[in-house]
Length: 321
Image (cartoon, rainbow, N blue to C red; front, top):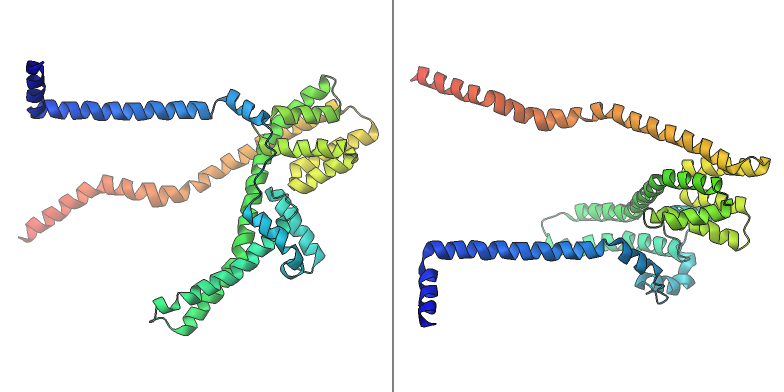
């Protein structure tokens, strides 16, 4: 035992052995961290686990603090909300298209906008003592700019969120139409087909599945099918969904086959997607001009002509001497 300890100490004193041992321990630590990370990712993206989690009904949903404040601000809604009813309706439609369907979403949006319009200029004015060399008129100009930003930024964020939501719906629409064709040709009615498609695509396209589930919930509550689908078009604001609903409404009005109508619309929609892809591909050459000129060409000229320029400078300098 004593000889083993002495041998171990001698090995530790050897620089090469200590360096190799440190490298081995470092590699083992990296390997262990990588394996733990892979196990965590595998558990997180396990489809069985996600399906089991989706079946768990969470009744105790935590209400956000801003929603609690919005409930308290209902008494001051006449101060926060604009008096124009058309503006309120258009803003509510924008919020619905962005995915904000809370009853207090309109009050929350205008409260955030009013708060940012007041808070940002005050923040600029409060920071004035930190910059005593700046003239007061410039400080007031910056405060005015901050107030304008406080008015514009919430609307800009809402537009971006709406575009992201519509992009998600647009990406899931082709799969939903193809599944609707399959379900209707298999003998399901339109209501049952919409419900079945929503259940199938819930994991892949949750935004579109939520919209379709809302349509089925409205129809179960007694809303007319045409009105429920019109509400879907109004909530999403997508021209593709409006076209689909128009086709389905005409098919139900004139008594034609819904499955055949959906198949024809699916083929037309597929052609439209192909034309859109061709259009984007045709624009690619023009879009690549600016990165090519400003990013690729300077490096190419430096690599290709740099040695010749350096050699020419050296030759001319020697001629001068």
